[in-house]
Length: 145
Image 1 (tube, helix red, strand yellow):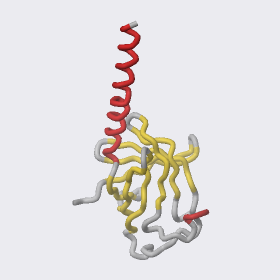
Image 2: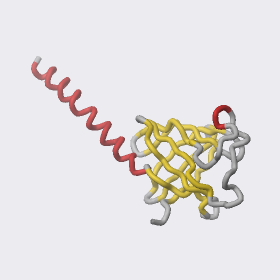
Image 3: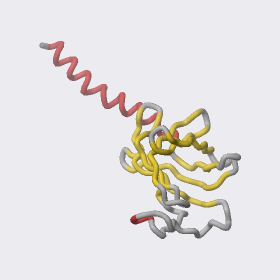
Image 4: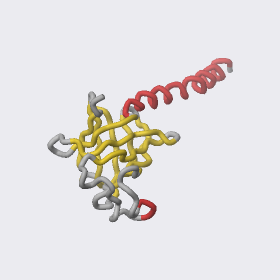
């Protein structure tokens, strides 16, 4: 009986520590990132931040001066005609080991919304977005300090 209580108490005390540790490792993705086009040219500055246990992302700045001040004309709902700078375009990612999974990302140019996940690969952040097997992976980098 003592052994059963000890195992239950040990599990109750250590399980939150284990999940907190896994979650804390995922916090390395927090902060500012440059999104990159296929050639490695920075397109925008985004911020990844926590809202409770979920990871979200907002566009802070568009580097193309011709796009600054643009609005999300093709977006649906509350995002429709909202300025792209300041737009929350990634929502609902949850920690899963060393990845953030089960989120949604909006392409502000087309208004299309996709399933997404992201993870760190060394110093590079990778965002995979699409539908099931049809997906693209984009790389992001930290801005120069």
